[in-house]
Image 1 (cartoon, rainbow, N blue to C red):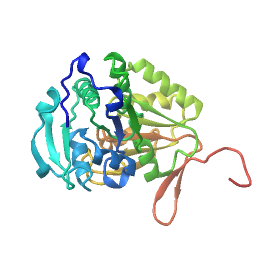
Image 2: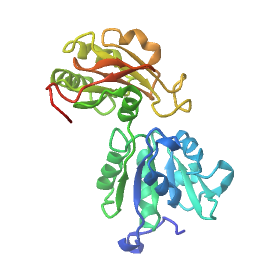
Image 3: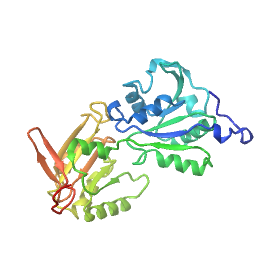
Length: 304
């Protein structure tokens, strides 16, 4: 495995490059990942993943156990030197594992580019789907800013929280829907509120991400345009069983738009999302439990 310290004159020809994969692992547990995601991570020369995602990936051997660590990583930049380890896989192959942390994503992107230029395959792990508030835009933005347009990039999709949560609820997204992030890191509250209002007026089922930020304000905006009795669900750690970030593990609570803030204790943090139905969304129950169902359309048809 070659090092990553190269000058412009020594740069590897592009046909000898590896590939940078941005890998969506869905909720992260083995049963919620695609086979493609598992294969890319298992065969990558270098995997970049947070501690939580490393824990998930070890559950079925997608990543080797911590005991497989042979030594600290020394073949990369500062991120690898400080946060990396070389692992031995069951087949004897060696794989570098680098811990991903908030506040170091720019540095990690640059490390990934240099490893790919050195001929390595890199799996940069993203929870959910890389294109839904995940890692993909960061890697493309950094490639543009750092002149890394020579680096091959591929996206491996995963199950995002909106879809995982909808599966637990039944069929709430069977008509038009949208997602809105409540994080004001990238966009100000006025813009977020404008999008919420437009979505509510347009009749979209709305799935809120980053609900630990101002979800009460978001609910008030939607209530200005939508009836108080529409069904709402608070979803925690969809697809993660008891292995997620929130105290109660994987749960969902069905309520109504005017009462959702009465369940504040159920909005647990980064693993929480809120699904807001429309006037067509119904609470439907069989002999086993309650579901949410949004019909595909408002017209009578003879068959699908």
